[in-house]
Image 1: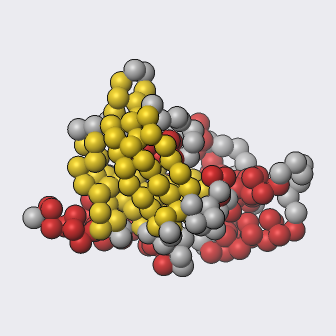
Image 2: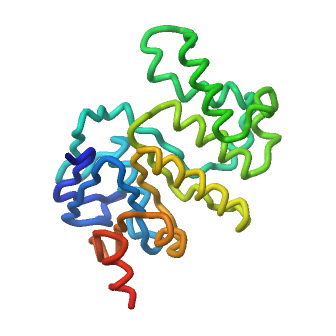
Length: 225
């Protein structure tokens, strides 16, 4: 059963349509990479999936027991966000905010979840370090741990390796692939076609205001030949 279904989506901003009549679905355990030229609507699509932006037409549906507030998200960082003056532990814990409801504090299980995810990504020793003092690769690990605190089902990532050197980018892609192998559904925007082909199970290629391709990676590779 599909976790996420996009039906006949038309998306735009500032009066300009960037995507028309886009339909696709993502099943549990899929690893979907969204690729395309700058301005093709990749980030707009992701914001629409997250319900941060409304489609001009069509709808986004969730299924397989997925609630809209169970989607983890790792956005592209702004310069201000990179300079955020909080500890690593505080940043990771903030991923549990949706779990708190009206409680003004984190409970024991939420703190344990944050500790588990910091250990998972090798940043436990950085717990009391200030986030803005970290390297780009370390910051991305922190944000990945934070996003994982927000979900156990589906993770959205917008250019997670942007600005990282090739070795650190490779480490980041391996971490994400490991999460997918554990059963987490992944939807990732990437400009790196090589990485998309290596790790993804499915490809959505946007261009010219519509889907140039959507399907399994093997079929996409045939299209490239």
